Image (cartoon, rainbow, N blue to C red; front, side):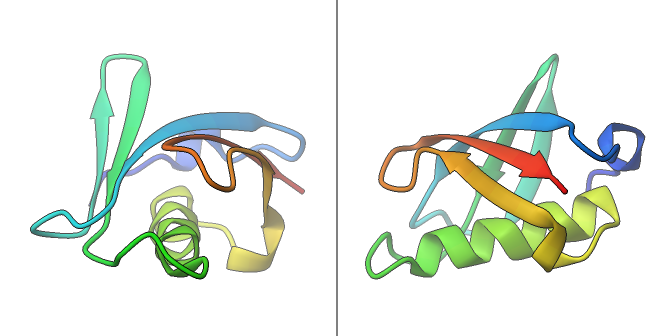
Length: 82
């Protein structure tokens, strides 16, 4: 698991690129970009919930502190840490 704890500041906005239906769950730091791959399907918010769980673990914050600001139905998402 990629450690992103250095990004976990209140008010920080984190842009991620999501790949649903991947072969495994992972958080990948690719240069400046953060890519999250999840095995769940993108229906009924299941993939978003999986992304929140993985991202919160990588950041070392509670899931409830992550707020999806933009991209609920898109692959490019923007999260804010409260």
